[in-house]
Image (tube, rainbow, N blue to C red; front, side, top):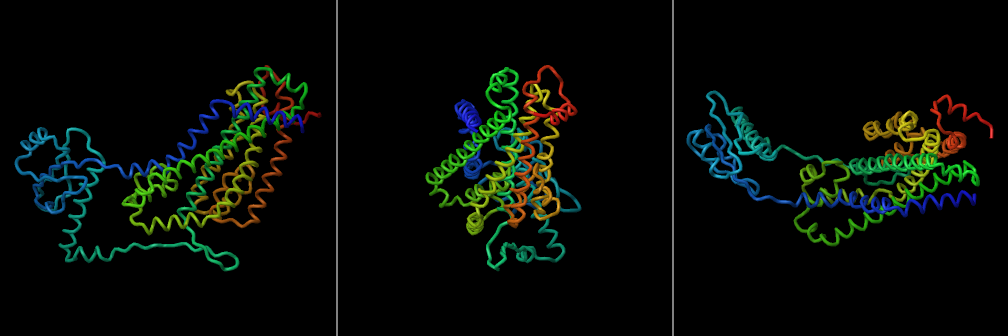
Length: 446
């Protein structure tokens, strides 16, 4: 074990002293903090008011186009050809032409512009005309549009979680979904990233023949375990630094811009709160989906109600178990080949369960207690990702305990199997290894 400790220390210190470690440690928190900070700035960005000419031959839509903070509507009259020439000289942003129809209300329009207008212009014109046409049709049917508007109602559906003792706790499907999704995806990428580092390290040492010198004084099993644990500790160190630095960046941002968040920037703040749950489009949908301070406060209350202590403990258990399990397989595959190109035939079967877990995310989020979700959370090759998603929704401790036990028993098995392949593969050169050859290595006696 003392020799294994030396290898662990060597692998750890070698990696944390690299420039790439410091660069990724800085870039990671910046990217994660950007998910919260950038939407705030995007939501508060404003553009100057754009002038849009309206040529309404029908005369139906004059009342619906009213100047607002984004657009200044200018009504014009004349022939279409002369108005187009006049528009090009005016420097205005766009000209909207609504042709006259003989038998019905106009339902089409054309936007003239010297360049392709933004989507917001087309959407604004379409929405205003749609509302006006619908109002006219309601009046034609003898229905007052104001009555129809008055009956529209927003329904707020809350979630109350009842435990076995009957105690109540507020919940939120949206917040839970976001938290589970983030936890599962982080585990997925970390297993791939750090498992791949173990394989590349084994291939580098094998290719440079350094491993021949090392195994003269260290058992192959000790070398493999030391490499796995050393790289894993580097991963944990980097993850903890990411959490601390991200928390520091977000906290500092809130201290600096806290007064803006409290004064008139509620929609921007809501965008930041909702950003992780909406994935890649928080800036587009955040402001539209949340319109008052009560909703934002409800989200913050839901976030506070989450048991982050349990989540963190489970994350560490599944990260350590999942990483060591996959690292043992990656180390074995790395010892069997002489370059990364040759490893592709072995990597796909090893990583396929992780890919299946990722593709099953949609089902798991909708049916966290479904049979497929339960089985995937028990299978050791998929449980680190799937169970982290399910835990956010609430899983009975017996299922979690059973899943962890299966994971660590499987870890012991894969480490034993990987060591048997590793002890032979690291000294094997110039031979194309097949799955049949790997099976022979497993049966070799010490």
